Image (spheres, rainbow, N blue to C red):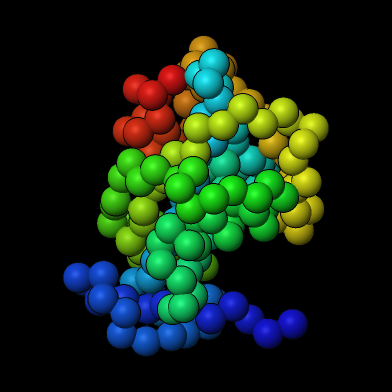
Length: 170
């Protein structure tokens, strides 16, 4: 399978090239990602447990190829990872961040747009992609606060963005 090609951007978030996903992380090239949080009308947020590292993360998330806008990428990632079709109009932009994560094996420098989807979707209706998603779960506010007290159980970006954008909406 051919490696995913993603947009490389400059400090102003203008596309300046296209590189393989692994090369962007190896070289620390700035790229784009979209994150989506699904919030139910009764105030629960859906999180996914990632297959690759077993950590709780955004409802859906991913890198963007040069052919996609942030919102198109958010829609595609939601549908690919969770198996639920949504409309562009279901996505509400709630944040825009520049994030940097440096680990021994990768440098993840990115611009991120954060989206919220407000829908009541029963857990059994999801058809998750097993190559990306190990598990999904709805968290109410008290469960989410407990999870946030155990940062080793979730990704750093999810912890940061949940605290900044999601808790106040629950």
